[in-house]
Image (cartoon, rainbow, N blue to C red; front, side, top):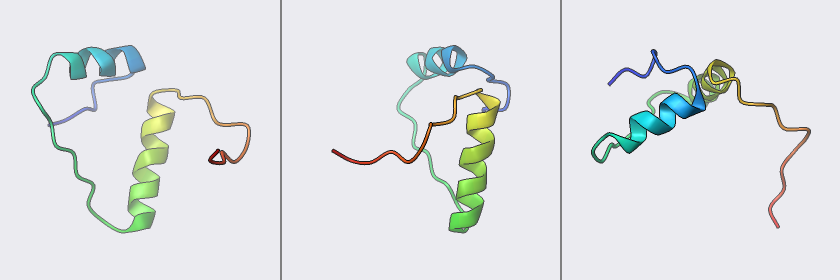
Length: 56
């Protein structure tokens, strides 16, 4: 599955609403996973958090 054509949160939600159960897995080192998450957040223009998020 390739999600490269999705560029907004709305498109992602539409994609997920129209699919069967999907299993995601991320391979590689913790650094590679962090880089993938960063790139994905930038691609979807997800706003950065103002600071660390702490549990309640």
